Image 1: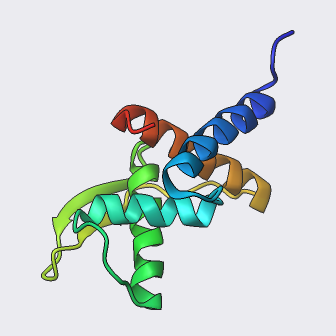
Image 2 (image 1 turned 60 degrees about the vertical axis):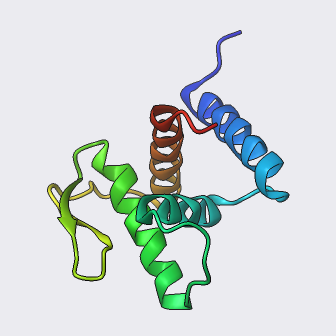
Image 3 (image 1 turned 60 degrees about the horizontal axis):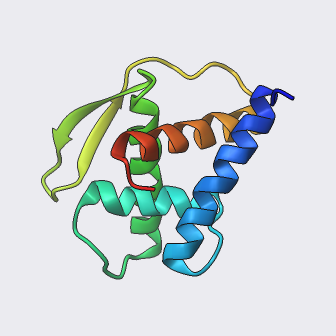
Length: 117
C-alpha cells in the first residue's frame, strides 16, 4: 500500500521527532524544532536566551528552512553576529494547516541535507 503525501509527511515528521526525543528527552513540537534550528544556525551553542531572542531564533530558523525553497535569501551577518535573510518571493496564501505542513516538510529537508538525524 502506497502512502499518501500527507501520510508520508506525518511518518517522516514522527521519525524526525522520535530521533530528537532520543537526544533531548522530550518529543519536540514544531516550535521547539524551529528553536533548535535557530540555535544551530546562530552557531553559539547552548546558552540562555531571552524571550525575544527565542522568538528571533524561531524566525531565523523559519527564514533558513524556507530559503531552501527560494522564499528567503541569506544576506550576511548583522552587527551582533546574527545571520540575516531577506524575503525574495512572497509565500502563497495558505491555511494554517498548509503552513504547518510546509514548515514541517522544510524542517525534514533541512535535517536530511544537514545529515543531522
